[in-house]
Length: 268
Image 1 (cartoon, one colour):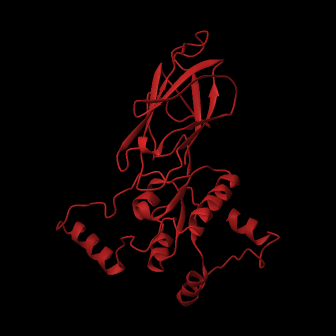
Image 2 (cartoon, rainbow, N blue to C red):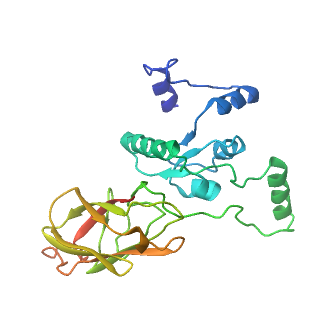
Image 3 (cartoon, helix red, strand yellow):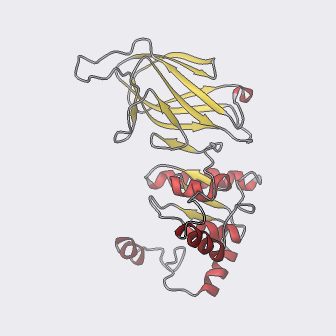
């Protein structure tokens, strides 16, 4: 495996990096007991058994925001997105700030099944005694400080293009993002990383309240908006609406009406 080769040649191997292969269950128990948190940064998994193992040891979880991890861990993990090392490093720093204040998501009450219960469910389904069902419901709520990208399943894009390499394009004069927040303490800051098609006039509303109206122009612009946290609808759907009155087809080179491209979304 390529990851194995890279790891075995790493300069920190045996010092701050340890590659454990073929260890016993007893040794694995000791590792979990010695850990501060579990980091699951896989880009794809069939299930993610370490999430359950971490919950059994009441170990906090930092996980990539992919559907299978959300289904298994729900609200009991801190999620991050992004494919570059910097995204994970930033997520760890954000999680650690929450951890120092005791505000990090905890896995203590995360639901999970024993092997016996899982096997019984499978047998019941195969014998027709039970319909297939999802054991743990996905929790789509956004954690404060979690930087989400254009692919995140925690953001519902309406009036935007399908994901393209690095961004989503607005398709008309009005586009919006729907998201759900939990019972967390938010500072009242939304930050967006945008590209614009020329100079664009943008109005942004949060749940019908105008946050800003300004002209934007350029590549990789961080647009920051401050608002009263009371505007957020806790445990309900919130809408961040973009009105783009000057959006147009750029010299007919693209059949879509577009004005901005969204790369990242951050709510604090």
